[in-house]
Length: 190
Image (spheres, one colour):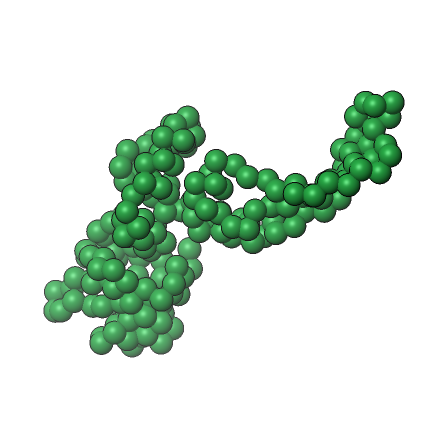
């Protein structure tokens, strides 16, 4: 991005990008400020003086990689990460060519996985999402749990119960807002 030549020292500002960063549009990129030292026209040393945007980069990478890996596991049921990384370019190109609505759906499914806890819902304490259809509901009165199914409709989750369906709106990747008997805020804990 920038280069400054000072006799036997070269100072640079370099943007680091991988194929994952490029195709998944991870922003911001990591910027490293480096100093290259030369002696008799030979490279003596390279020093990283500072690294910019590291935390922001990893937050963005995490947000983009989770839906991608959920997609790959959903489509190919991979046993381990070796297979994923052996064919990473193929899987990335397939994923980025999906329609925006499909990518949004995979993003929702991927971020739903895990446990959501509510401190203000009178009837339900926890929701534990597993996969694209299974949810375990823990009641707030006795702490009993029961397995059920769920459907995703845009930004709304419909959870099946024996009485009636429960509705939750996806506020963000860490928060669900319950309606009706499930009224309350559910925060992701893992």
